[in-house]
Image (cartoon, rainbow, N blue to C red):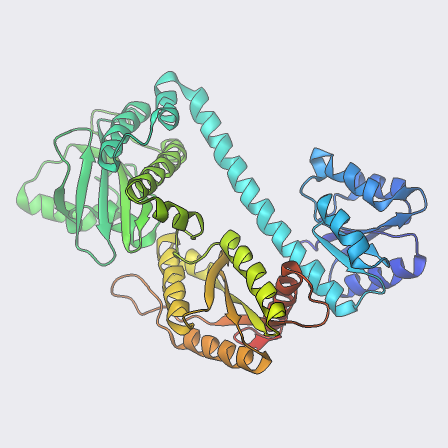
Length: 491
């Protein structure tokens, strides 16, 4: 993997040399600029992943240069860390308001600077990956819209669906639109649960009367494979595909004639432990489904699933307005607090700690090597593992503690009225509990074993004056825990 590129803009040659040496020693590719004009030129030439920008340059004020950079669409998402010897209260508010992600005061502390750089590079990479995935999805949808009028009809459903449709009505509408757009005679939605041997067909274009038909998964290997792996399944010809070998033998013994030629099964998450599959089939008198059909189907079904999930949310909240507010503060996968609600609560708790001369602790928890779970078992099992982790943390905390999903496989616990010793002890209990926890796996397979790295920060503490400072301290501690070998607690 190529080293991250960092541009350092500062008029002090000694600062340029020391920062350049420090970051190069940590494996980064460094470029230097001593003027604003040189900084802008190197942005064009080097395309850096992060910019360290001094507030005062010989030919430019850092604020003005920052505003120019953030006003250019090419650099709008570039993380910028401002450098200054000015007091934070004089410079940080304005810099952050103009789009900087952080403020580092000179003289800088080497370890703190490296930790902040690493944290913002990591966050920037996550943001770019999410943005790229969104752009790819949008591009796929655009290709689908341009393909043919019949295919565009399915995308139109995003504009037609309203809260007046129930989820069951929505399923019926979607299978009809999907069948026409994909040019298939058979399209259905099938629901099942973790470990189940049966599934329920809740909508089928070939028979609109079907709303609750139970089927055995043994007879539908494509459904079983999609539910087990969480990955799309394409079978171009069931007469030759190895997935159907056992079923074909049963058909031969029973003398069963099957008119289906090819199948696509696309899984999606419905709720904890509950999953769905969009099943698309073509008969022997039709062209077989192929990779292009799978690509298109994934794009439009992803859009359709988003509509379904929105409709489910509306159904669940119309009867209770208070629940709607709860959902606004809750991560939909784990049912923990989301980042917005967490930030609001932390601000209130920090003010309370100062007012009553108390303390609080923040634990940032990251599941080690979680990507291997998704790669090995599929995203459906990965979602179950994250839910298991959320349940474990809920069971460990006290009534007044707060647990939130920070993003991906990262979780945060806020412990009011907790000092350094209490925070360290609790963090160790969390680490041990994760290590001993048998996490969800595929039916019949051994449970997944995981570990967690934990960063701890407490407040009040030196150089922690805001929520951002507290998070930065915990994030830096988490990085140290990972750098020291994972499965450990650091502060």
